[in-house]
Length: 367
Image (cartoon, rainbow, N blue to C red; front, side, top):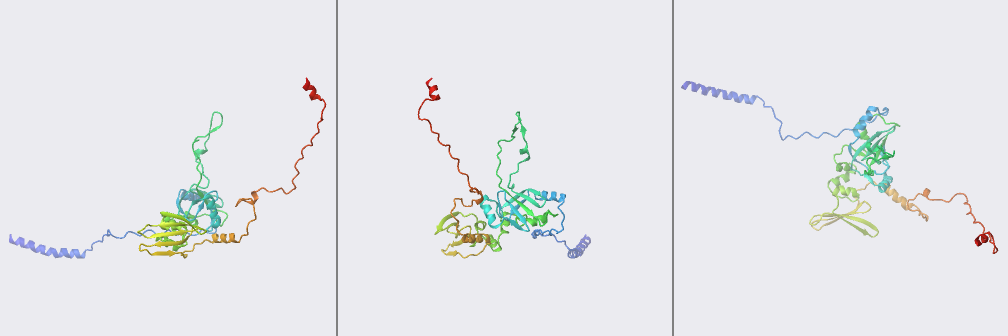
């Protein structure tokens, strides 16, 4: 009994080093760590190659693909779209109308879209020389197919199927893109997106990101830091600080201004003064009682049309006295005829009546 037990002890002692040697020589496959960083986000989509100069006319199959790809697609506006029957035209990266003409349309008809607003392409039509996009329903409200159906009654007169349905006003706009050629060339959907980038952003993830791509880099950094710069417009202030909790409208001499107040004691309080949609003064009251006032322009926005229009108004001679309203067209007012107007007709001369005597009337009156 002693011998087998001793042999077993010897076998155990011999197998332990072999097992240890096997563990050190065999590599252990590495397992991915649970805390490993996730894969990086896919890079931004590269721009498509430009359209060849000798590109043929767009084929019928490509037209179907463009319409199917763009209709009902959600985008973000990079420029302002006016309401009404006059939309935006795009050619060679330049929009029409722009500058002062666009501001006048926005003032008269109101904006359908502002830079950064989400929008939906509701209708796409490929014409002979351009592509038409309806934005948010378009400038003209289109009827549904069932609204064109009429049923004749017993008297033969058409009867409305939905008499209680009210026609809503159109609040959308449209975009027309023209090409150097006199026809719509063959292109891919990505090439068309690159051409539309000056006015529509297809890659933005939210409204804020779409708007930040339309402002200068310095303004973009200030908005991301929630900081107001002298020279910003009211739209930039709203994106930087949000809607002001308090607004005060005052008058300094002949200049009217608005004071937007952000914050309340015991926190820092910012007073943003806006004159004619431009920040002219920023006053910050610190918690410790320190007062910081900034009036020097920190950012200069491109407003060449506004400055040129103001200079033109100053140089324009005063108008002659007129009964026309401001802005009324001279061609629409009544004008005197070029020829000499005829004299008014003269009344017939008075025929003298006999002073007395009997006549036929008196004879009949007597009977």
